Image 1 (cartoon, rainbow, N blue to C red):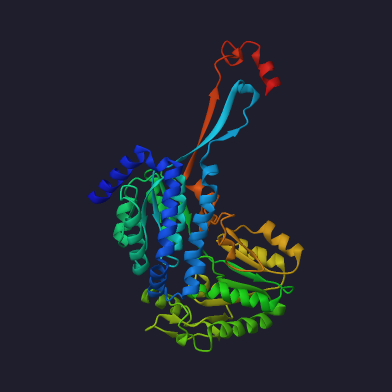
Image 2: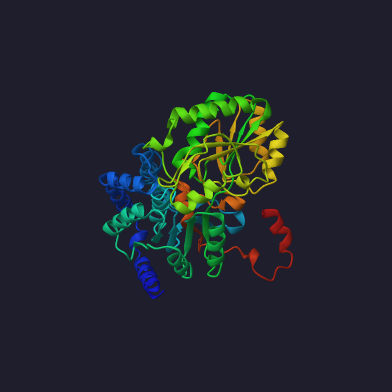
Length: 455
């Protein structure tokens, strides 16, 4: 579309002026962003409640607070990250000095989802700003209230030729992906991620894909079952199960299955009450389409607990599913809703084989007191990231990268990794002119022996 070409032309011109490459400029933008968030926290909270029925606590804990912590951490370290780094030079290049010079990619595209619409839009934007890029932000049309607040924020804080928002649905996404960007950061489903990568390949544009998948939660016979149940219920039913790193299914050792399921059912009632439809703090499904998809997965399932739904409020009760096999409909795709299938195993080798036989998940959670088994799982199963004896919390830190592997995505961000994601590392070797060692020049004659000695 012509308007997008003009938008990108303006951003490229602005980037070439060099203003956003200045570290002091980047720091001012991040401070202004943080101040706006602090001053409009209630507006953001209200929008998240309207879109997903998130309580004020959940909105702050899983969205606003994480973004503010990212900005705080970035401001503390940005000068160090943005400085050229001196590295060692091989003796064969004497006399010279070597540097790694970080530079922004240029104009980047950030495409974000609806399930954590504020956090998963603004956290990568913090990375793009701190690295010195211009950015086009494309939030999801499924979370219109949060998108509206973010659009107001960006238009108030930044000139459009520096950072701009594009609103709209699938047509806007497709039109943007037809344009050439210098980097694309996408968070969403596996299928759309494949499409984004295909479109990016036409321009040889590098990408980060933050996707999803079926993340297992393993519970063995040594685990603290009460604590495991409490933390599984929290992580699974957070945001009504609409979390890319939510435990998608449980793999529990057969000998403790009944005890674990009993504790999970107990904690569901303790956290959400006997009637979740009367609980104003319990989130809802994002829209009717996703409600119908998730509700449909319960139709032929054996329900141990829960199972009720209300389309008028778009709420689905936290539900435990039993007698599940790998061929069950609920195991054919990422659930992205409040359904928790329970499968069993006999020993850890069986677990490792079952998980490794499927696409590598975005997250894996393991509840155990056995350090040997813990080491075995960490060594033999590949996944994006996860927790031992907890769920979800591994992504709520600026000290570690968050991202997937294989089908669950590529690339990582948070903290320093956000800066690295949106930065090209330019390698520079500076040669001194005082001496010019002749060994590398032809004719080579008998120089090979000397070369082997000094390398």
